Amino acid sequence: MAQVITDSLRRWIVEQAQAGCTPESVLQAMKQSGWDEPTAMAAMEETLRSVVEAPRPVPRVEVQEGSTADAGDRRVKILAVMQRPTVVVLGGLLSDEECDELVGSARPRMGRSETVRLGDGQSEVNAARTSNGMFFERGETALIRRIEQRMATLLQWPVDHGEGLQVLHYRPGAEYKPHHDYFDPAAPGTAAVLKRGGQRVGTLVVYLNTPEGGGATTFPDVGLEVAPIKGNAVFFSYDRPHPVTLTLHAGAPVTAGDKWVATKWLREGIFT
Image (cartoon, rainbow, N blue to C red; front, side):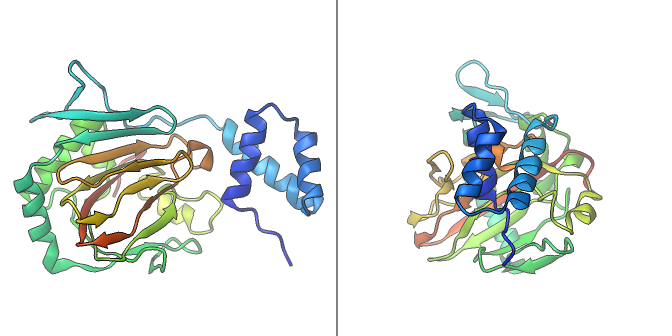
């Protein structure tokens, strides 16, 4: 049976390199664990080549006096900052009224959420993602334009470098299992996806309500959980499409009530 190079193996290789282990010792450890030598060498070469790849420019939040950030038409509170991975928890990005209006506009258009299929870059329903969702066209309404401009100012990233705003609805028990938002460079369908604006380099998730229970955004690699509180948001960036960014994340199961979120994905180029 062919051995598969997984994200967990790539992370382990990176950890060994960061700890100062030589390539020879890492290779020997993999062989002792049952990996055949050609697969082990391929995994090391692929992983370490990705790690040394030049980082891309990414969106960023500039923390200013009073632990706030400029979002154009308002100042947003900075509730927490993590350097590695780059994660910023934001307070009051949207008002309660804006959250309610966004949910009201999205509700009639909801359908089963999809993910990008690795084989050809098309969308598909995936058992790992058990929410309902929809996309607004960029600039579709006055509300969407206002929110997109606020996000662009906050993240210092052009509006046209963002995908359309997606709204998701999680009912009790619904979740999104651990995943990365960037497109896997090794997947056959990635080349087609990248034609529409290049790689994703950042994610902004806005909580449109406060669930009665569960629904946190979690980062398993670093043990971080962000509570879903209405109007607040979490932003994280990834300067290369690789697990070394530590941006593996998940939407924890909703245990009571439901959860509504809006997600904005940022691309390295103009998204068409």
